[in-house]
Image (cartoon, rainbow, N blue to C red; front, side, top):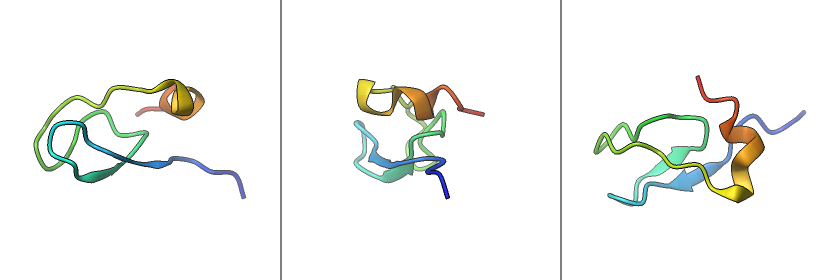
Length: 45
């Protein structure tokens, strides 16, 4: 089964979040896509 999203840390508050989320649910900071997860970030809803 392919990986749909990776778990990354919010740069503002440190919460663990999915790479396909646009905003952190804890602090509301916009999630920046890193080169490592570029393909997964392209699938953001």
